[in-house]
Structures are given as structure tokens and as C-alpha cells.
Image (cartoon, rainbow, N blue to C red):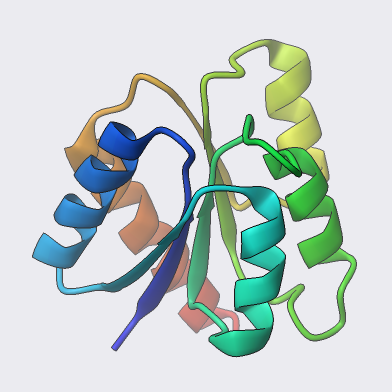
Amino acid sequence: MTNILVAEDEPRTAQLIEFKLKQQGYEVNVVSNGEQVIKMLDVNQPSLILLDGMMPVMDGFEVLRRVKSSKEHRHIPVIMLTAKSREKDVVTGLDLGAADYIVKPFSPAELAARIKKVLSSSEDGK
């Protein structure tokens, strides 16, 4: 089963994402800060990381930087899902290696479609 790690510090948003992804048949793990993402990578390597840009302890951009600089984890696709909508933020996320960048507020149906596309692309690249 495809496992998605969701990093989202806003509980309602995290619940909505988790519900939508489980409806789509994904296994979902939810954490609320960037440090937990890094710890989870060593416990259960996900098929995809859905990453909030603004979180406590370690922000999503630093998490993305660390994931993409790690030999063990750089292959994991990361989708940024954040309220940081300035062009500079989008470009930074993509330059750091994000497979996609979605600005909040978001459509759950669009999120599901983008996840499916990124997962399909990562499977094609293997």
C-alpha cells in the first residue's frame, strides 16, 4: 500500500487531508512539525511526503532541504502544501527539489489528483 507522510500543524487541515487520502486508498501518517518528519523517515519510509511550509520546530523548507540532501531519502517525492504563496517561496520550494507546490487554501480533489500524478511520475522514473 502507498504510504503518505503528511506534515501539517493545523489539526483541522491535517484531519481533512488524512480523511481525503484514506478515501483514496492511501496509508497515511500525520505529524505536526518538521523534526517529526525527519524522525519518521527512519521508522517508515513513505512513498510521498506532503509538507507544510510553516511549522513549529523546523519549517518545511528546511525539511525539504534535508530530505533532498540525504542519500537515503532524496528519491522520496515531496509536495509542498503551504500558505506561503509569494513567487519567491514557490521558486525556493521547487529549486530545493519539491515535485509540486500547492498553495493553501486548496481543493481536496485537486490535491488528490496532484498526488496521484506525482506518485505516477515517481514510479515511471524507477
